[in-house]
Image 1 (cartoon, rainbow, N blue to C red):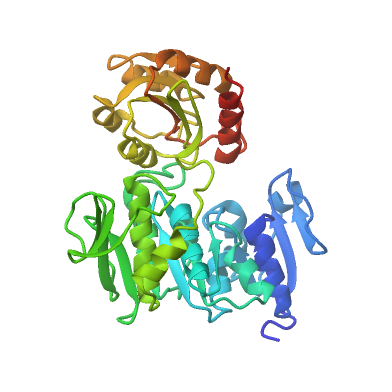
Image 2: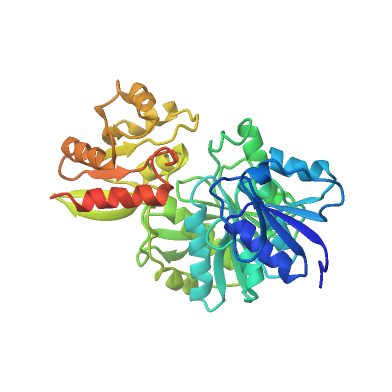
Length: 434
């Protein structure tokens, strides 16, 4: 067995860590899982060191042969440094799994739209008769997929900047760069560091690989062939306009049968079509497969129409760029519900997006006072103590024909366990309206 009798430390007791632990043990390693969280629980029958014992851990040279780090942990944090300072080689969970599989990969990164695009790509391949699964930063971790023993024709692998921080050899046949915008400044010292981490997706590409990049993005795609896309009029190899898709000006299909909405989602469709083309699929077959794709929850999801008002759940918009994309994709006047955790983001650029489209704003969460100060001179603004009050206020501020949209522009952890719970609470508040 590849790692027979070797001692592996797995950092993080979540899904990625557990997947890596299973994969390491499958290849013969003796595994110990470490997690500093006080709420971390033992997993399966692995040896676990959790909470205070993990924080007080002393690692000596020779204690372990390898340490595998989950993407939620920074390799420069105290726990990983205890291992690397003792001379233990460190590898990221994604890189670890990549080195143990030969399955073809389509890798997707970007500040926004990664999960939708990843699901679209997996649905496209499955609908065309090629076995695929969304994985990586979305769905199953790459380690879980490899450890399962199931063979896939193509892995649709969402890959975050956190995962890209620790790659060494990782590369994909198709590498997608959807967009870039400010985010995660609570993890990175500055925007340049965040950009550099994401740009590593192209670091190991060869001349035989393809880089699929949104038109106008300044990222270098290295040695890969570069294909560009846009739904906003920028010069691109692949484009969308007036309900139709084009390759270098030649029509390749219609969006009429698709269930996804908005120009930002048409860019996701373009990226998916381009990925399928890398693997030899035909446009008409791919569009037929994508017609069966259902819109995911919490991403510009229409909850209901009441009194000629649309209520839309875009709780997945956890940064300013995602919020802007949601606003641009709408055709109705908007009453916007925004706010949540303060991630030290600058919201002033959003002022230009609001004029003429957003009728009023309702703010929630710890960043609500800051947002009210930023936008209060521009249009009517209110604060909601909770989601039910926010929905009620937004309804009162709206007029028939409006869209009332939850698109927070930041994360939810000041009030909720994640964007999904936030979206569910919004849904409940909307459905309880008379």
